[in-house]
Image (cartoon, rainbow, N blue to C red; front, side, top):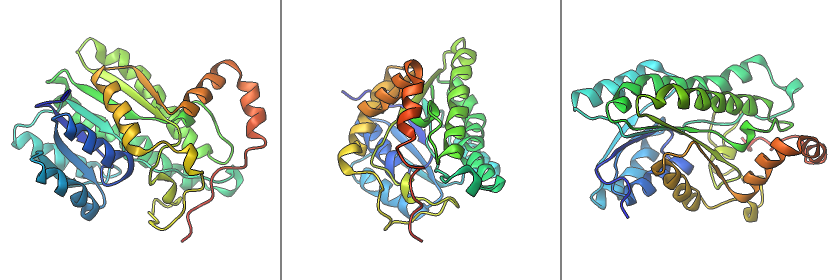
Length: 270
């Protein structure tokens, strides 16, 4: 079934990982794609095979920490008379480390992308979504429910966007705009190959075992189904569902488990 046939979907952070997988899954469901990312060469590598399959794909080099770049993208869409059925605010990275080893600048950098980058994207595109009674999709995390030791900055950013999703869901409902929060657990992704400065290290190893990580394509299928159903939230991965359940019903047990679970993932090798 082509759930998004003749629909237009904008995805930030679409050059790799979950963003690229979402682009491929939306394309399989008939969507027209608008893909944004900082790394234009990798973005084009995602777009090229899709265009070869006959998919309509526009790409834009865009850093969500730069408001003017988002404004430029939206202005070009308006010139082309393109409205948006779905906006996926996927761009993000993770700052990790013990709180006393991080600086205020680390927290500011984290929030500039993961929180203010989401806000900039939503503000820039919302009018185009409203006119289609479409969907705003916010990429959260199970870390938005659990303040994991060694990941205070990242957890704070994901708690913040979860609150944003909950507020926007009510505010925009009367306008026919859906808000879906996606909360993945461990998914195959480049997130853990990006250091605290936001620099990608392609040869860095993922610190989590492969058996625990959900394949990206499978996660993208679940996400696209949830977006099509206009769900309020979709938690991705079984272990993610368990962690969210524990955070709601047995938070003491979760804190006890974290005491023996290390202090967050190591930084990629530079």
